[in-house]
Every structure is written in structure tokens, then in C-alpha cells.
Amino acid sequence: MKVKSLKPIALHLLIISLFVCYEISVVLFMRLSVIGVQYFLPYYVPDLLLFYVNALLIMHLWRRGNKSVAILLILLELLCHFGIYLAVDNMVNHRLLIETKTNDYIRISYRSIYVFGISLTYWLVMRNKKQAQEIYDLRLQALELQNRQVVLENAYLRSKANPHLTFNVLDVLYGNLEKKMPDEATVVKLLTDTMDYAIAGIGDDGKVTLGEEIEHVKKIIALYQFLNLNLYPVQFTIEVSDDDKQLRVPPLILATLVDNIFMHGYLTDKECPATIILACNNNKLSLHQSNAIAKRERGSHGLGLAFVRNCLAFYYADRSELAITVENNIYAVNLSIDL
Image (cartoon, rainbow, N blue to C red; front, side):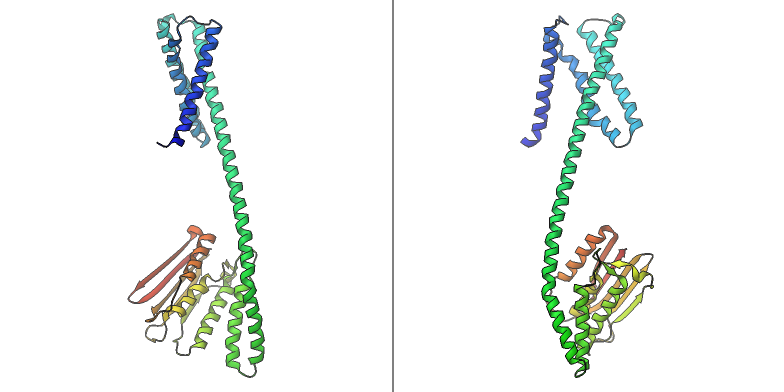
């Protein structure tokens, strides 16, 4: 047992010892009893049982909402304390039960209520202390989250600086190529649109509409297939109504998964085309995509999937599921989100 865990026990033993010494000293000083000091100790057995059973067990039932059960147990523990204390009192004073006087019953009843009151006070103090600690911890967490948000906002602003410059350059380049080299201008336009989506148009909630994300995915597919005419067309099936397209989702989650198809997939085999099926029913978004794995896969640091998993954990927690399987050289992704 660690030393730290022994401190509360030692503190309780010290307080109990001081309390017992105080009561015995008062009794001896006022000459309320003529019995020896050693005869006082048995009286504290029922007192301690009542104190700790009430504070550690019964009052926790009260706090959890089981008040009717707690009240019955309180009455039962008071009755048990009264009976045990009466038995101890008769034993110490060599008295039969029938010899017990009315004053003794009143005295013992007062003792039971007195010990119960001390136990209740202790429980209230410890509960308030725990609540104060919880409030302090919540405030500390809120402050840490606030500081983290400031850091993230600064990092976000810094991350936008260079892409914004690149976006402006591409926009000028598109203007120069539009008439002279239309094919190349189309590529620049698609690249400009994808960059513009990544650095602008995000709402205050950090999300975009599902329709905007779908359009962005379409542009990514068009950009890759325009750059490489040897790619067999990706089969992109969309089963999303116009109303569902207004639902809001974190940007780039779907786009990142689709981008992985072109980065790591083998897309020149007509017999094994890449497929993407995006559906939304009853606010449940699902994405299924599969593709053959390239023989010479490009290097990857796993940043894309890490980004997707972080976004899902932050926005949806247990309301999302991402499953990735590899079988017969086919890489499959299944994503479901309760929006």
C-alpha cells in the first residue's frame, strides 16, 4: 500500500482519537460517570459503525436518487445503533434490560441522533469538497481548451498564408492560359478550385454542406483523370437527395478518402475499376469505395487517414465508423456517419 493512500486513514484515526479523548475528558471533568476510562471504549464501536455506514454507503444512495431506500436504511441504522448501544450500556453497568430507565432510553436515542448528525455533516463537507474540485477541474479544462483553440487558430492562419499566395498565382496563370492553352487552363482552374475550397468557405461551425463536399470530390476526380488520360474512369455513384445535400459535414473527409484512390490505387485496368458509392438516408451518411492496389505504391506517411480519424473522433465520436479492409489485392473503405 502506498504511503499516500495511508494518509487519509491516519488522519481519520487521529481525529477519532482526539474526539474520544475529548468526550472522556469532559465526562471525567464533570464527574458524570464513575466508571473507569477503559469502560468508555466499547461505546464507540456502535458510534463508528453508524458514522461510516451512513457516510460511506447510505448517503451515496441518497445522492444517486435512491431516496426512499436511503430513508429506510437510515431508520434501520439508527435502530441498530440504538440496540447495540443499549446492549453495551447494560453490559458496562451490569444492568438487565428490564432495569433500563426511561432516561437511559432518551439518552441513547439522543446519542444515535447526535452521531448521525456528525456523520451527515462529514458527508456534506466531503461532497462539497468533491464538487468544488470538480468545478475547478472543469474550469482548468476549459482554460486548456481555450489556450489550445488559440494555438490552433494561429496555426490555421499561418497555414493559410502560403496556400493563399499560391492560389493567387494560379488564378493569374489561369487568366493567361484560358485563351492560348484551354486544356492547360482547365487543369489550372480545377486545381485553383480545389485549393480555394480547402482554404475558404468553411462556416463558423467548421463545416460545409454535403453538396459542397460532393462537388469538391467531383473536381478532384476530374483533375486526376484530366492529368492522366490512361486512367480508367472512376465509377462515382451518388445517392443523396437535394435536401440531404444541405446537411453539414466537416470539409475534406470524403475528399481525402477519394484522393487516396488516385494516390495509391491501380486505375488502368478496365476489368477492375475503382468504385465510389456515396449515400445518405435518414441523416446517415455512408461511403463505400474500393480499388485495386498499385504494384508500385507511392510513399505514404498516413497523414490522410490520420486526419480523417481525428475529424471523426472530434465531430462524431461514437456516431461514426471507419473500416478499411484489404482482400485479394483490393483496398476497400467503408465509412458511416450519423449526422
